[in-house]
Image: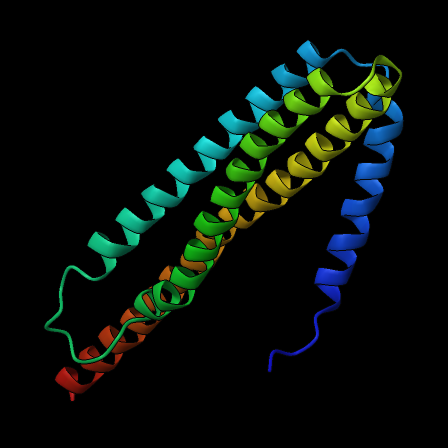
Length: 175
């Protein structure tokens, strides 16, 4: 069983808060403006998927190009840790895209089938969910930057290890 995570609870509480604020603000925003926001959200999702694809390419070709090495470098160990992050990033971003598309379909159907007196409420709900999806997308964008910092740290450890090895070899050759 997985360990309980307060981060997920905090994330869900903030998401519910974002939906409530979006609901309150979105009742006065026209559907056309909300669909434009959703279009920008889908563009951001595609950018994150592109960044993930680039990371898969960099880690796959650059790190695992030489399979003959017996000992993994720090950079390769970081790559092993980063791959699960990237897979989660791709899955979560794909879920945001799917939720966005479902939101468009359900929202349009609800607006067309319900009475006019509920139109303001539907617009508020629609905008609240757009705000939640946007919040999730911002979190995913921050997650997409994590491999870069961890990768840099691994490269620095590799450089230090290489310098120590060279100094050690130079000292042994002088003796």
